[in-house]
Image (cartoon, rainbow, N blue to C red; front, side, top):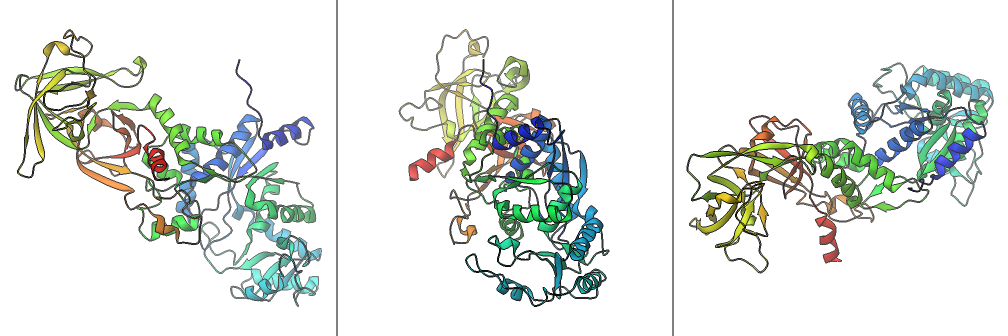
Length: 554
C-alpha cells in the first residue's frame, strides 16, 4: 500500500480553516496582469490555485489585474485564457480589476472620509526622498495635513481630469516611521490619461496594485489569496486596507515562485527578447512561455506533473530544466505516435531487391500493442541517416560499414557491399544486399545482428523542414550577475534542416501532433507547416544529453 502524500503548508492551512469552520468552502483566484504572455513560472501558480480548489471542492476565479492601461492589451488577455485552458483548467468566473473601478473609487473616498488618505502634490522624486531608508524614518509630506474636505474635492477633480499625469497622487495616511517601508504612506491612486482596453476613456485615475489587489480579493470573497514570496512585505498593507475598510477578510499566503535553469522569467526581459529579434515572437519554442512550450510540443500533463514534483515551498531555489524534460519524456514515451524520419539523408540501394517492386510492412505505432500498427511501403531505394554509415568501421561499431550487417527497422537485414562518393569525397550512395528470409516478425535467416537503423522509402518519402531547438541560454542562470543577460544567449539554439525526409503517413499530421521519430527524438508539427511544406519542431531529445555535456565542462 502506497504512502499517502504529505500536505504542503498551504494545504495544511486550508484543511485547518475548513475543519475549524473558518470557511465552508474555499475560493482561490489566478490574477495575471495582461501585459505579456504567461511563462512556465505562472504554470506553478495556475496549477496551485486551480488544483487547491479542485482538491477541496472550491472554485477559482480568473481575474485580470488590468490597472495599468499603458502596458495592457486584449491580445494578452486572450493568450492567457488559451494557456489556462490548454493546461486543463476552467475558471468559475472571468473577472477584471477594472470591473471594480467604481467600487475601488468609493473605497478610496471612504479612506479620505476616515482621514486615512490624502492628495499629495509632490513629484515622484520628492515622495521618494521623503520615504527615508530602512534604518531611518520618513518625513511627512507638506500636504499630509490637508483637511478631509479639501482632499475629497481634489480627488474628485483628479477623477474629472483637471490635472495632468503626475501632478497629484492619492496616498494612504499610515505611518512615515513604519519599519515596513511599504507602509510609509503608499500611493494608492495615480493620474494616467491613457486609453484602457476595457473601460476606454472613462477613467483618467487608476488604482495602484497594492490598493486594487486586496480589495478585489475581498469583493470576490477570496478565502486564500496565494502569492509568491516577493509579496511578503505587501501583506501588512493588504491587511491594513481590508481592516480600514471593514470588508471581507481575505488573507494572503506566500510560496516560492518557480525559477528554472537556462532561462529568464522576467516579463521585461522576455519582451526584450521579442522586440530585439532574438526570438521569433512570444510563442517561439525557445521561449519559456506556455505558448512557446506548447508550440515546441510539450504536453499539458508533463507541465502539471512537473509542477507537482517541484512542490510548494517557502524557500526560493533554482529548478533544473532537465526535470521538466524528464516529465515530458515520461509522458511522450507513452502517448507519442512513432514514425520514421531521416534528417541527414544518404541513399541506400538494395542491389538484389527487385527494381520497381514495393512491399507493405507493418510497424509499431507506440510502446505497447495497444498503440496498434501502421503500414509502411518498402522498396529497393531507401533513405538512411548519414551517421549510420562509417567508411572505416570503428571498434564496437554496430551500424553500416563495408561488409557489416544491420537490420532495417521493421524490415530486413541488409549487408553493405560498396559505396560511392562525389568529387568532394562525400558519400552519395550505399549499396547493400538483403536477406529475403530475414523479415521482421518472420525471420528465418538465423542471422544475428547487433544494430538496427531506421529508414524511409525513397519512392514516397515526404520532404520536410526540421527545426532543432536547444536551450536559449548557455549558462544555468543568465540573470545571476550584473552582466546583460543577452550576452549569455546560445547562438546555436536553433538549427534548421531543410532536406529531411519523413514517412508519408505524416502528411495527415495536425498542428501540435506529437511523434517520436525513431532514434532521433520527439517532434511535433509546427503551426507554420502546410501540406506542401511540412515543418516539425524537435520537442526534446530521447535522452538528457545536455546535462552530460555540462558535466564534462565542469
